Length: 277
Image (cartoon, rainbow, N blue to C red; front, side, top):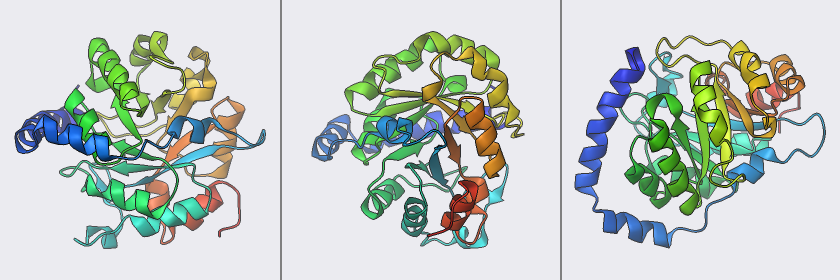
């Protein structure tokens, strides 16, 4: 890891240790025990009612290292993700991705609960998860699924996290950017249970923050189970959705493009080639 990603992970390691000291593990266990069963994100995004359908995981984030604050109103201390989540749900989102990193993305763990109160679809916690403790934390705060970034984890760490996530009822979205990491992860697609893991190809280089959606189409032929593939970042048009679907990719994660619009839900409808609701 280099550049921005290395800076984020260094900060995250210190942050996790602080959070562990603040919240005893027994308290997390008790919080998990009180949660309703996780909503099934895997089933939500892999179900396609017809041959022309693409599932969208629509993202909620306020800022990013590459974009800064995405819209001026997202800087408000009273930012509420629920109205955006409702607009996404009204306009065809299969699931919601919620940024929870505070320092670099201005996220909050509490956003997950607000989103789940607003919509019936699954919520993915998108953060930089480097410690099994964070999986317990994710489920304790109501997450239905988690992002695991292969560039941030050794293979042994990734496998251990997948096992624990499945035990907690969490779907994992295992993300890769490079060909090297795809080849490293590929033998473990569907582990430990085929209906708990999705494989994401990030079109954004996390070191340089540059985006190229061809990153997905270059690597799709290396994945046998294309039904679990998710193309992430840089998708802006219905034509790009169609191009990815023709390549065998029928799940996309889209955020910044939608969030720049005054009405993210209407932007999602346009992306899907529909009339806004």
